[in-house]
Length: 148
Image 1 (tube, rainbow, N blue to C red):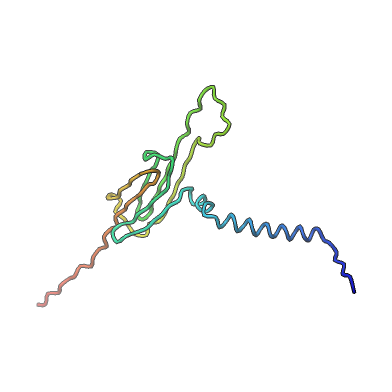
Image 2: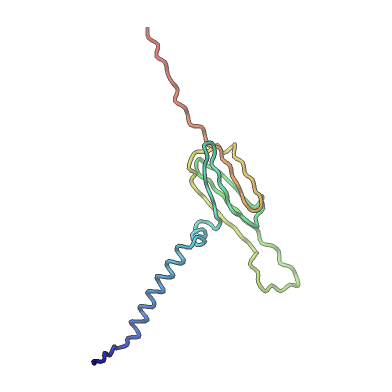
């Protein structure tokens, strides 16, 4: 019987381990929905339409209605929210302070032109719902020909 001796190459194994770790990290970070929402502006958003309106829903927990600005220009919707920093209390030593300020901004192209002057916005339990009526399409006008 012949014994086989294999030479151990620690650098080769380390490079192989590094490639495996790189593939894992690329897959786990880039495919995570929370990472893509951070790239988009930090708040989850849903946009859908019915026959008569476009509806936009945004999760904005911790915000108040007066903290959010909405504008529509043509078919572009811009939504911005900001919570200002709370004042620090005197005589208090913070151990963790993460609630000092929060903001988001989202801009998107709407699927249809809307009538911004008839838009409705409701804010309930941290969810902003925008209802934007679609502009009625211009109907073709039939022209009758008079014969002489």
